[in-house]
Amino acid sequence: MKIKIVIGIVFVVGIFSWWAKSEAYLFGMKSWDNSIENIQRIEKEYKLDLPIVSFIFDPRGSHVEKLMSGLNSKLWEDKIYHISLSPNMFSAKEVAAGKFDKQYTQFFQDVKKNDLRVIFRTMHEMNGGRYPRSSNPYRFKKAWIHVRELSRKEWLQQDNILFDMSVNARDLPAKGGKPAQTATFIQCQQNLKEKLKCATFEDYYPGDNYVDLMGVTFYNRGKGNSNRRWGTPDQIVNAAWRKTLDRLKQFDKPIFVDEVGTTAVNYTWAYNFNKSLEVYANNSWLKNMRLLQLKDFLLRETRIAGAIYFNVDLSNGLKNRTLGELDRSVIDFASNKFYDKILDVYEAGQPNESNALYYLFNVKRVTLNKKTYLITSDYAKPVKDLYLFTTTYITGLAEQLNFLDETQKNWTLSKKYKRFDKADLDSIVDATRKFFE
Image 1 (cartoon, rainbow, N blue to C red):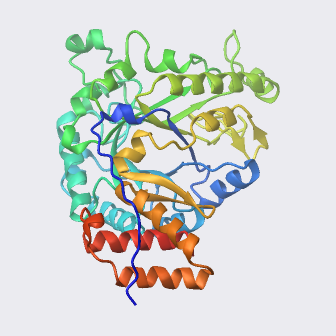
Image 2: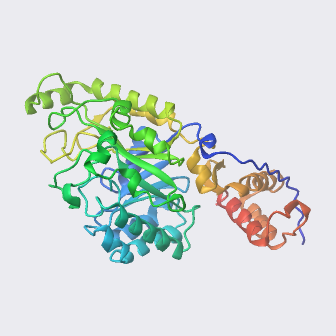
């Protein structure tokens, strides 16, 4: 039997600059131990629905492929995944020569196979001098372009993956161009760049066609492990001698905060381990105050499309003297610490359809029948209409699913649907069916 479906499809096409799409940021969190279970527990116990979840696949292994296959089924299909993948200790020259192709290719295949939306961060903080891929802009650009082209060979486009060029808030190239964790770093401030002949993150930029997001990492360190400066987000990323955020804006790309975190420890005199332990135990208000500053900063800086709070504390409440690590976590089941102002950051960064990330992925977040999915933007309105028609005129789940099956067989390309080809129409029915199953 031929079934006629009356669905009004209205398309409004507008051309906007990407920042007109970003009314507010999207907020996400790093999984403490790179596990799905950690995120599940956070969401369950604190009644959160994080729009972005972050993982760092370093080191890699077969467990990574298994984890990626479980993301949509265990964390649901309405999330964006922020994933960092570092090329071990390969230099940029080696990456460009294909030394890490096998791992990159496997990752790209997993993204495609599982139909994930991924903010992809690789070879991050190249403007520092700690990693082998850093301190050589020419070689870095070749490596970056090579990796981008690898993703296209695996049929990944912008609707699945956004390439995030993630810089350090400070330009710290290694002296002599020889990067290492123990290297001597050059403070490459803008007013000294010509004199010191040092590279800043601008020099590493491979071109507009190869970058979708500009990313940045910054932390508030205080007295978490040594004498460091305590600062607001503005003081850290827009210090007068750096102006990192203002410089990032010059690329006219959405900005993503790949890692942000703060210690809970600060006081006015010199660093003392016992004093730091005392402040950590008793002065939660310090971290809470800093979290509110972060929320205000993210709301005010509308070019920032999203942020990941680095919910990790390798120091275990300062008990482990781990080099460079702080008590960054805000929801920590190991130390039983919870800083409630993170909920303010979360509330301000909940999903909104005008966010630049959804726009770049070409999706809309659709909720029907208490289920939420990311639906291709052009399909969102037809899916809603088809769902409404089906639930209004067809009774019973089995009958509704049968109706959708019959609909898919009997689509006719009438004037109403001239924008779509048969494959599009099939995809609309497939997307609608998910809200019933």
